[in-house]
Length: 459
Image (tube, rainbow, N blue to C red; front, side, top):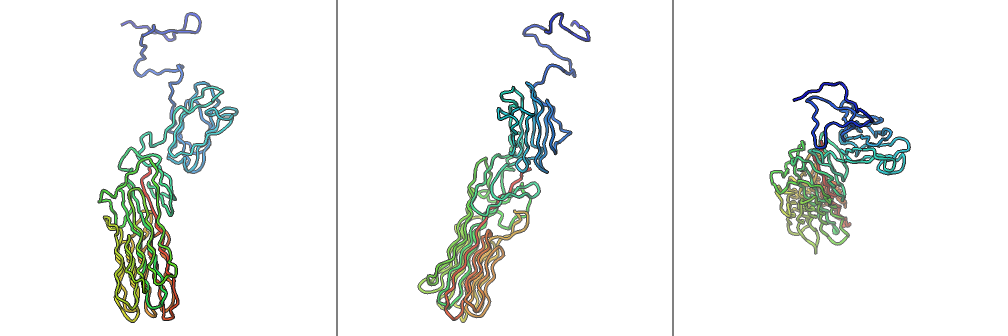
């Protein structure tokens, strides 16, 4: 092997220097470095200088930009053909606070107007810019989002979004869309936690003043807690049943939030209206059952539903509460409404069923209490949902209390008083009306609307 040792190789004439001939391979020794050959299409990432404020970029450098504290503007260097700059969202905050790319005076980005900035508002976005010429200016030649480059987390929009630790929480109090823009490469993190609560059942009216109206049943309550999201779930966590698990894909999921059962018009002794279903993906929670009817010719038991409506009572025969967990799910989405007995002298209503307990039956001088709901910390604090409505009472006595989780209380005793409506966005059942001997008609109350909550790990 021949060896030539020189400090400089220069062309004999002109400015062109040729090493080897066509087809030859020129090899630099191990550890050798090159300079003056031009860039290779990459940048030197400035990992030791995370950008947290406005700055001017330098040709050949890449920057991690942290917009946690507010919007940041990066001014591009003066363009020259082949110049290159890259940026990357440092901590997935461009969706909260934009990164603005501003060209140097008189220059363009992607052929836009001179001096026109580019606003980056996509979470986790990264771009590489190469300066081409005066016609297009800086051209974006590569674009990515953090999920596409190996992230293990979901990116999604929809509802009211809050955070708890490393989790994002989307709360829907009305219809909407949970739109998953990207999923993580780690499949376990695409399994989401959720709570789906249907609308609570309404309470019927009382027109003849001789009995108490039952409470409405709570809307169905369904929950599944993903192992990726650390919070305290309710006792009704359905993770152990595989059919309850939802692994999301990058698509739009329509969300239905059920309304509470509406008040009834003044037809004699009308039963309560049922609540409406709430839906997320393959999970449907059934609306709560309305209370039973309480006067001729409309004697009826409590209605079935997510939780069953409580029975109403006059001087007639006893009635049964509505059947809960209808249609059936595992774990059960609710419980039965309370039954009545012909309990003279004060013919009271029974309580509506709740997510974790059945409605209480009536007593001779007391309306039944609504069944208790379920408490979960999916929204970052312990909150009860899907409590049953309390039963009303005839004349003196005690009205039933609403179940924890938005159930309405029965109307005031010894009065012609409607019960308390179920609390909005809890799925609580309506409280039943109370009456006295005057016979003044009393309209029933409405059930509380439902809610859908989705939680997942985002970092």
